[in-house]
Image (cartoon, rainbow, N blue to C red):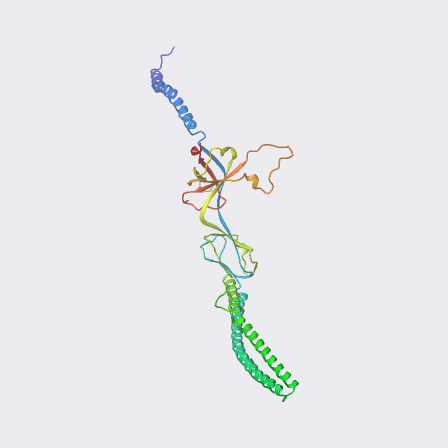
Length: 357
């Protein structure tokens, strides 16, 4: 046999030495795993035991905001549109304008009605002053007729006149008295026409009615400029087109208000046992993965979602399958969001129900 290779023996010894050095630390690894793994399992189990039932959550939740539907108070043709889709506006900003020409004419007509009523009032006052002269003339006529009648009566007693002349004198006296009564009635009527009523003291009713008509016309004229009732974001502005006829009361544009936002979360009915108003909540959003907002339970829904559907489920036929219902829960947001909250965004809600136990 050939002599053994001394270099090969040296390599074998080196490999054996390396294996011995590698196995030395591994003897400590097994006891470490035997101790640490049970501790980790116990810690995880303890965590789940401590937090079991503490939180209820749902991903069936959406951001909600107030939406104001703006309509015109007067009808007419749109002559100006001052906003565009998704444009932010402040309360009082002009949204669109309706042709003011017909309403300006109505204001001018109302001014003419006021002037006409004032002229009529002046005429009535002049007539009232004229009735005073008529009354005085009627009284003078009565005095003259009375004197003539007394004279004819004396002459008749002496036989120096005829009965026909006496009767004529008596008729003239009665006619003069009737004239006085008519003059007094005319004066009363004229005085009533220039008087004021209890509802509008100090002003003639005709002038008051004309002023009310003028105020209504001015109000309609001011309403031709439709302004934002609140701050927010313009939505559905495509219905606003110059030249389009606007009908009074018809929704023209919507404003999604930016003053407050909340989350409508639909929880399973089995999650409501310990849920109470005021319990803290945490809200996350699919659109903003890094955003977490604190909130609280503001209110619990008065009915399940199916109760308010267009066609509520009817199970009177006996073919019934029990389905877990969803109850809407309103979550108020207590923090200001660093990102804009958009109505309809999907959200996840987790409620701490410890206070309800």
